[in-house]
Amino acid sequence: MNRKIYNEYVTILESELVPALGCTEPIALAYAAAKAKEVLGKMPDHITMRCSGNIIKNVKGVKVPNSGGMKGVEAAVLGITGGDPSQALEVLEHVTDREIDEAEKLLKAGFCDCVLKDDVANLYIEAYAVCKKTEKSEALVVIEDEHTNITHIEKDGQVLFHKEKKEYC
Image: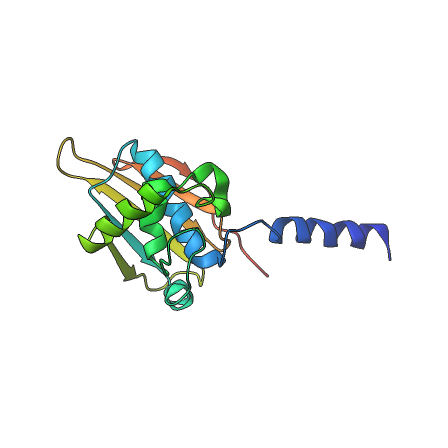
């Protein structure tokens, strides 16, 4: 095999093969939510996950490892209570039983909504975290096209990070 072609294959494999704790779609939700909490700098009062239809379909019945049996979008709440966004798709690697219990209480209290976002890429996740009780604050994190590809971060309406979406042939 030609060395140039070999190197191109290796580059593709390195970008596509990333360690993940369980199915990548619910873990990407947990990652986005954990990152939104980190940007917010405090525990939000509520989080809304706006996702493409493909993400919603793929997370619906998938159990999340290390979660006490949570499924799908529930992983986003666990990302808030115990996720470490610096771990990307291993965001839930070190959650504790206490953080799982806290996530379950928040789920019962209606802490998280998941809504369909139309006219977006097949892999599209928005995590919108908001605090209303004390000092009003909000954070938005957007992931597109790849499970760890954060393309947009905002805090209180100010854009902190933005990169243009990749164009594919």
